[in-house]
Amino acid sequence: MLPESLRHMRNWNRDCLDFAQQQGWRSRNTPIIIALYSDVLQSFRLTARGQRPGWQPPPQNRYDQAAL
Image 1 (cartoon, rainbow, N blue to C red):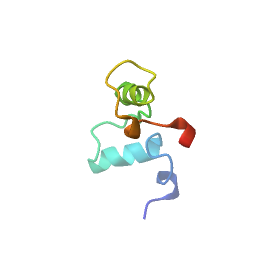
Image 2: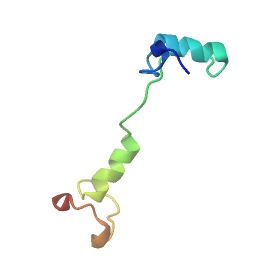
Image 3: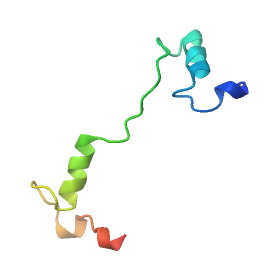
């Protein structure tokens, strides 16, 4: 079982990052940045909504924001 100091915010927790490096799981103990936004995915979303030029899906497969 991990000590309390290693249990939370593992991508930013310095103790956890140092532990992972000592165990050989990571080569560096730099913080892990998780990208929540993707330009590629956003372009697909906008196209599906009809807010961007490009190939449009058939009407039955289009994103309907009003239905949510």
